[in-house]
Image (cartoon, rainbow, N blue to C red; front, side, top):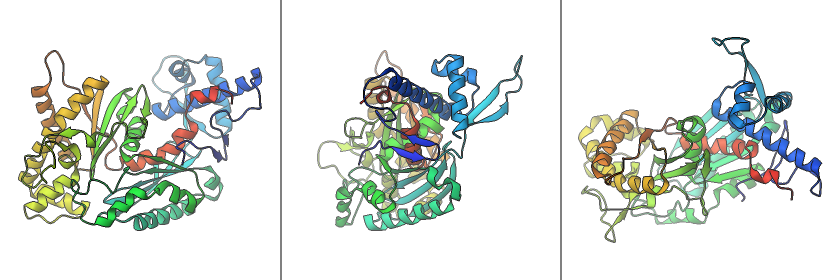
Length: 422
């Protein structure tokens, strides 16, 4: 299933490449495409800025004040943006602040993981309206699909009757090849490999009749950070998320980058040395991969090897403050494993920062950041500085939130293809 689809909403038909114009390459069709492109540029700017005046928008997107004003008026009439009152504290006539209208469109995000299924309903601003969470230990596809479909049905029913046709679609965040790396992730059920043959997005689309947008869970989490976290300040950054495994994504010049196969930024498969922990499995070759050492599963494995019974995330949260020594041992090993992949990413991409988030308590995230900074300072090559680290601002629901933002972003964001007649 294609990642970019067209969506019919109450605000009008949101068209993809080449749509919204007649045949031929006349001046009129070009004007329609340029206007549509500029509309999306303004919507995209408001999604990042939160609030802005017409003057702010014209400067931000490099449009004349008159052009921005005409587009803003049209978007207001279509219910996609609204006035938020006057800006206070400035000299002269106070400017009217604009923002996305939360009721302009809605979207559902589903994160299907190895230890949980999360579903979010978000409004046009990307704010969460409703959320559901199910903890499971390596659920099989039919169970995950049933949980997600039940949540989606409940959220569609919860929408006001006049908003049901403004549902832009479903975003899905799930690891690619989820049934792989059974040794590294301690997946004990051989049948779990069936996940590699399941197209969860196609199944959800067939069952719901809604357009579905699929991304790797690390990429989806990077999308959430791009719009709701550090991406409001950074234009180019590498992002990693420590969950059951460890994944990541790339944001380059203000846009997320998928790569050829959709796996750009998938740091978890980068080679690292063997773990120093006796609890870790021995690699089959001279090196291991990062997800063996820097993942929540590796923390759970280390706790279990030392007599602490942990299965679900809620049990892990209770165990962490009770066993600080074991957690510190894991943090040391995870930080050591992360150093070379992070230095390699910084040298290759020359990003503004590396953003690190995790499905872990904030104090553990801060501890990992502190240890990483020390390790990077010691390992950085001559004439180079260690990459700046930033803690992610979204947290454990980053992948689900990014999935929910996908239909809104892909249907309402600017694309150069809009400017090309088909």
